[in-house]
Image (tube, helix red, strand yellow):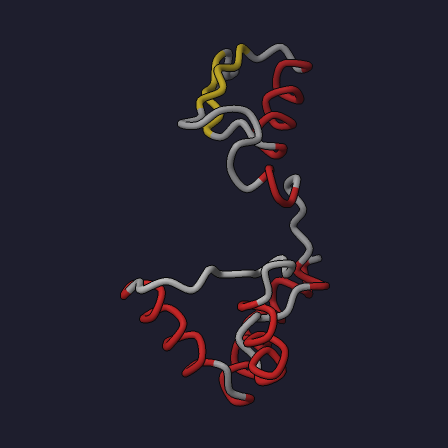
Length: 118
């Protein structure tokens, strides 16, 4: 089997750049591709953190109590400016419809295999 000499890494975020660096350190020629630029996607907000052990599904009943206040408060990290936006209204309606205890438990059980690997 021949050794890989050249690869393309898609994504210039924390994970993509760390992968590219590691490959470069092992003698592989690397080209990094990203449609926006370095750390312009998910890395901008979470720096590549993948932490399933401390992640819970967002649509859960407690979010309804806290969430409505947070969404309309300009100082909140989840503030959404009130505007006539049909797509936002559909999203919020679906989010509220899924914020039930039964759905939350189902989503949490889906994370168990991931947490077992963490």
